[in-house]
Image (cartoon, rainbow, N blue to C red; front, side, top):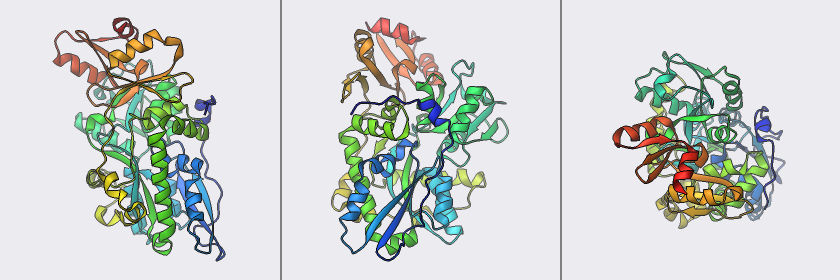
Length: 447
């Protein structure tokens, strides 16, 4: 499949509206409508949303039930998890996907309003937290978190990116409530605020930081993987829906696993499909969802992710967004275990692919993996006109980033990439003789 160029920046700055749809599962006795809430541009959820919809696996598995019903899937697209939760607690969405912090709010609101929900699977995750990034304008003089004191920072309150911002500032000795002016904005609005100068920095989730960096509209200030705390997105389902139609939920989870297998086996075509459906550049999609991308996709609910949810509760509680959340009661892996059968244990034990440097050449249906960032630079230097995108893992955190957007350090003969300037400077401070260099200089040295 060839990539169709799209004016992604213009498309993404338009407000997203939900698709119209009927009420959740019920119908007329023979036709059952299953309503799925998803976030097309939150590409860490594509195996339960954008890619799954494109592949048609859920509809196929529903048709295979042969239970006397005709099934219709109503896909409803949202910009964040909050409206999905609102629709779920109103009984209008059956299955939804969202990030870890919104999942906790989903659990709290469901219990509070008498419509309990449950985390039933995981879409994508990063065990270090690399799915969230704080960025600044390309010409910004801000070089570290300390420089954010007194500044305006845009984020979506209650999102995973907000959680990253709070934790990062606290670790840096900055009070997120007093030392910065936090702007509660939708991702597209925050991106516009950053470009327009009304925000000094933006803390957002996948794929906004990578998109803005790719477009030359932002540069990284803080790599969320510096926290070394897992971040993930997952699938939540209404308890009443799961009990009434367990076979339908299991069909969804089976289809999600099939979409996951497709993405892992065909990462470039998968990125192209998501790009075509969303208007995002395929190069940005691949940064997160590629063979060595920032996100690892697996439906199993790993213990590390459950533990991370439990640690997240205190952040939301202190922000008065929730009270206590019974995470153990919220997590329910019975349906995904049944849907996947013996394969579930294998998926639970699976580990992320090792980080690697990758080059995506023009017209190629596969990327090329290089043995080191220096080898990638050498290859890029020899094939400049044929390179579609080049990716390198941060030397400290392993977070993949665009090679031409990374901060490069020369340490003797070694050429090391970093997502954020602060981590590069920290490395230089600990290694005598090492120094920050430009990307152009790194290319020259590699050649």
